[in-house]
Image (cartoon, rainbow, N blue to C red; front, side, top):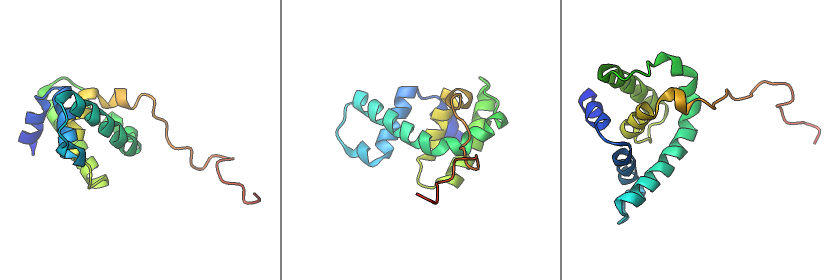
Length: 126
């Protein structure tokens, strides 16, 4: 698995996004490379919405280093978390995109869910 991650880390963002489109049902469509990148970007955005509440609380566990060894280690750890939490995610490609984008940057506007706050419960009298 580490070798797969190392290989994926060598790909550009656009190549990874096109790969993500290819890994989805939409990848079977005869899209141009540019269209596949756009489709891949939309797919990533959708998956990120599903994954951020799992990953952002744990972002300090990852180094955000430019070292190839650290990036492979972080990617392997993220892959483990993603594959465990969401079995239907194209985990390797999503993981490498997260590492390339930087978890800290992706989580910069994330806030924990507001569960348990006063006033967050539905009014039973309505």
